Length: 367
Image (cartoon, rainbow, N blue to C red; front, side, top):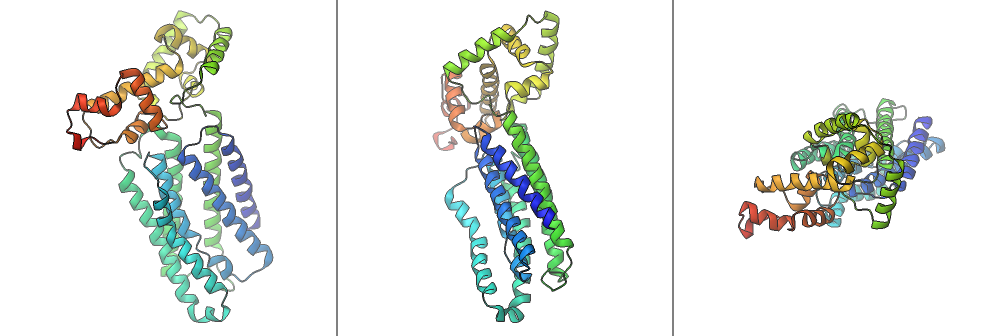
């Protein structure tokens, strides 16, 4: 158990270090870092319990499980472009905060253990089960229109792992409660505890993989580079590139067109490096292809495709999209970047374009 907890701590610390190296952090990235800090607290708490030989209820009675559902829910909202307010966060954190207060009262009055222990654990573990299942169901219904979008493949993959783990934990807590196999006895079954911390380790490993991907592909096409950096990059590209044969450029263009047909530009984290990897070309070859054949640099090319896709969605009259949802659906990592590029390319704001082409009444135009 001690080695498992140390492994969680080490991986979580490394993941935080890598995450802080990423220059552009989304709301989802911030929630991931908060999650890592929380599992560091969770595993450190249990590690101290293990080495100090404290009473078992000090470990098993703490309501850690009530925090994971809300964290998963807000991570999914961030990944799918939904808004997150401080008021909502505080509201969803209340069950955990309240139960921490109950835990302090329970742990500080040993004489009450014999009387209230069974009730305390049954209610706590029941609430953990309800919380985890409730947030899974809530997340499904509030984000089902976006959860399969290609625009957030890395985050959705991480969320999918969290879904599997959360569902497994919820089932386990139901079994523990129904069959009264609650790990509070003097000689308890260690299996539930090993399962919980193994799940935490798997999630931490998944997060570190996500953080590494974010570090290596951290310049999304939706973000603008200042003119000085752009000129330096272009000069470097001109210096680097060799004369690529027309035949090879044709091959690259064919592969690129296939990627565009499956809307690769919807990936929020798409960069020159990642697109070149998908095409199977060196970066400077892809740059040369875009410059010679499309007469655009990478940012101009990808943003034009994203805005073209946004225009198509607006013209189809899908009123379910807010402007922020539309930005994420088309591959931009912020509403501001989307509005700026949309105005630059079309001469209109997204709202103006929607009104002009879809003929909504003023009351029907989503903001």
